Amino acid sequence: MKSIYNLDNEISAGDWIREEVKGKQTFDAPQLSSGCLVKQSGRGKITRSFLGYFATPADTVYFNDRGVTLLSGAYSNANGLSVIPENFMKVVALFTARRCITGKYHTWINDKDPYMKPSLTTMKLTN
Image (cartoon, rainbow, N blue to C red; front, side, top):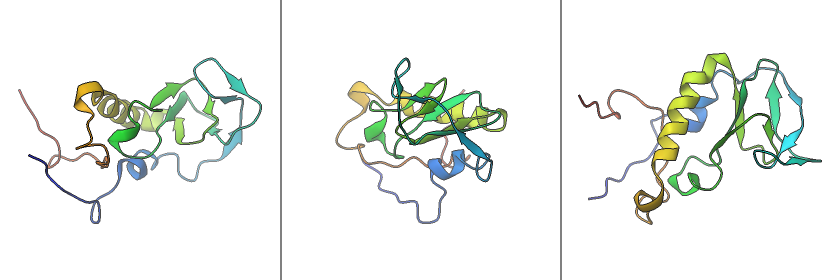
C-alpha cells in the first residue's frame, strides 16, 4: 500500500542538512566529477573547516543510485554541501537513508518520494 504525503508543513531533508553550513564563507577548490577525476571548471564550493563533500542531488529516491556520494573535495555539479564537524551526524544519517533504498527497493512507486527531516513521528523505532 502506498502512503501519499507532501512537505507543505515539513522541512525537506535538503534544507535540514544545510542548516549548519548556511551563511558560512565558501571558497573555490578543485572540482571533482567523480572520486578520482578533477575537472577544470565546476560550481562546487567548500567551507574552510570541511571534512569532505556530500553530493546529494534532489531530495527524491530517484537520485539515490545516480549521484548520492561522499567525496574528498568539491563536486563539480554543485548539488551538495561541505561536510563539517557540526553537520557530520546529519550527513551520516541522510547518506545512509538514501543509499539504503537501491535496486529492487527503488521502484516507479517510490521514485519521486521526497526525503524530509527525520523526527520521532516519521521514524520507526524497533528493538
